[in-house]
Image 1 (cartoon, rainbow, N blue to C red):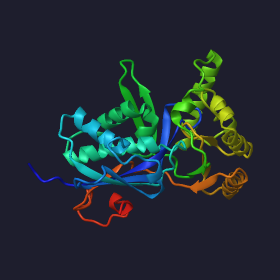
Image 2 (spheres, rainbow, N blue to C red):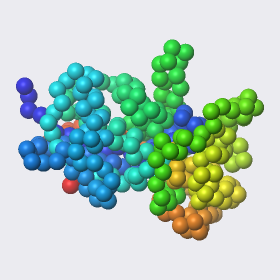
Image 3 (cartoon, one colour):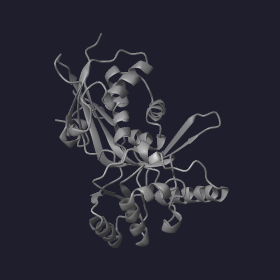
Image 4 (cartoon, one colour):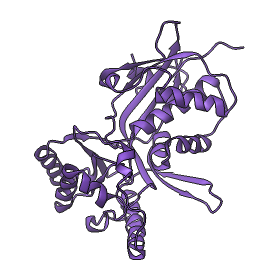
Amino acid sequence: MSELRHHSVQVPATSANIGAGFDVFGFAVDLHLAVRSRPRSAAAERVTVLGDAAEVVPSGDDNLIWRSLVTFCERHDVAVPDVQLVTACRIPFERGLGSSSAAIVAGLVLGRALTATAVGDRDLVGLAAELEGHADNVGPALLGGLVACAREDDGQLIVRRVNPAVRLRPLALVPDARQATSSSRAVLPESLRRGDVIEQVGRAGHVLGALTGQWPVAVGAAGDRLHEPERLETMGHSGRVVADLRAEGVHAWLSGAGPSVMTAVPATDAAASAAVATIAEAHGFALLELSFDLSGALSCPDDGCALAGGGGCVQCPELKVS
C-alpha cells in the first residue's frame, strides 16, 4: 500500500437563489474555507479549527467536513484515512453565504484526493447536493462561477456553469445576527398562484441573462415572489436593507436563506457602490467587497502544485492554513 499523500483544499463561499432563482441559481465569491490533512496522533482532536470559527465549529468526528469525507469513502467503498484535519474559514457562519456547503464540498474533495479515487465533478456535485439538499449552493462551491440547476424527467440532476459578466462586482452586506437555514425554510409558503409562478419564471430568466451580461438588469423585475417576502418579513433589518438598495436602483437579494444581502453592481459604477456602502453603514451591516470566484474547489498535494508540479501558487490552499 502506498504512503498517504496529504492534501490541502480550498472552497469558496456562495450566494444562492439570487432573488428569483430559488433553489436554482448560485454563484461563488472569493471568501474561502481551507482545510489541510496531516498525520494524526492518538491524542489529537479530529479537527483543529483556527480563528473565530473555533467557537462554533465542532472539533470531533461530528465535524461536517470530516463527516462528508467519511461519507465519500463509504459511498465509494474505500478505507477512511485516519488523518487529522486543520481548517480555517473566512466565510461568515450561518449568514447565508454557504458555509455549510463549503464544508461538505471540502470534505468530499479532500476524500477524493486522499484516496485517489477517480470520481468526476458531476458525480461529486450529485453527492454534495444529496448531503446538503441544495445544488445551487454546492454547485458553485465545487465548480466556481455561476450555476443553474435543474432535474430531468427521470430525476437526474443537471448543473450547468458559466462565468458571470466581467463588468459586475458582487458586494455582500452581512449583519451580526445568524440565521439557520432550517428555521428560515419554515416560513416559506406551500404553494403559489399560477400568476405568481409565471411571473417567477419570467423574473428568473431575466436575472440569469443580466448576470451573464446579455442585458442590463431591471431591478423592478429581479425580485422574488416565492421565498423572499416571507423571509424578509421575519428578518426586519435585512428586509429594510433590500428595500433601500432596490430603491436606489441596485440589484440586491437575500443571499441564500439570509440574513446577509448580496448585490451585483457594475464595477465602474461608483455611485452604485457608494449607495451600497451608505446603506450598509446606516443599518449596521458589514460591507464585504468581493470578486467572483471562477476556480471553485482547489486541491493540492503537500509535495507540489497539482497543476504545475511545483509550488508557490498564489491560490494554493496550503497558504490559507498554517
